[in-house]
Image 1 (cartoon, rainbow, N blue to C red):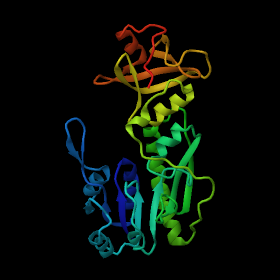
Image 2 (cartoon, rainbow, N blue to C red):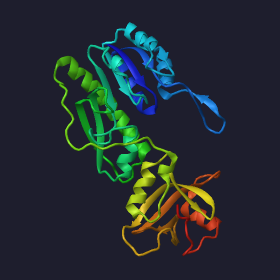
Image 3 (cartoon, rainbow, N blue to C red):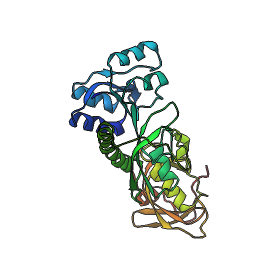
Image 4 (tube, helix red, strand yellow):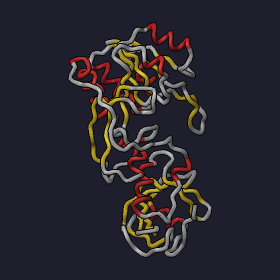
Length: 310
């Protein structure tokens, strides 16, 4: 089957890899343009582009996908199916109508929950116990198409957005192949989305700000959900800090929110609106990652001192 693949970040690479390994004819890959990244402001290619080039697959990187010229380019390939995995742009209706077998999307949530750009992060931040991947037949809405297949996984306490994303990307790749085989055999049929929907908007830097008056569990989930970017952000005596790893030391206590409770082993314990959070690893701005205790000792932090309110 002739397939045009739309995808951009690391999350999409396993799906492209599985398509190639399964013998599908991936005639072209469409990905986002190269972006300037890092302090060195170097031009960086999307992960999907790098993988496609290594596999000898032609790559297109249009600045936009709504032009008549680009539509004609894709139509000229005569794809049987378009596969979209974390591409980063909404596919226009004229393009959705091109392939005979439809446009299939791999989405990292149990639809209709967490429609949108950042389902992995928000599912952790909002304290979900499970999530999963869904393949759907795309329509003109935002993740509103008919469901084809779905698979669940637990969100583990040790998960963050990176570890969960890695797991879901592999699950999504396997589910994509099962979906394509099911479509070809007739075993998989589209089913309308049902149940309560929710939205997972794009992550912005300010979403990582820690409010110490929140509960310990809420802050713990925020730190996990916002890793690796933008991270759980806070400040101590004017110094900006990103919390890398934490744990719930006490779910309920009467400590003052944002106050230093104690230094224990490698951890720095901080009071919250409800409970105590143990800071295990953190990164002061411009410095290396260190333990919570190392941060405290290096700044002569004492019990009762306070993290800044944000």
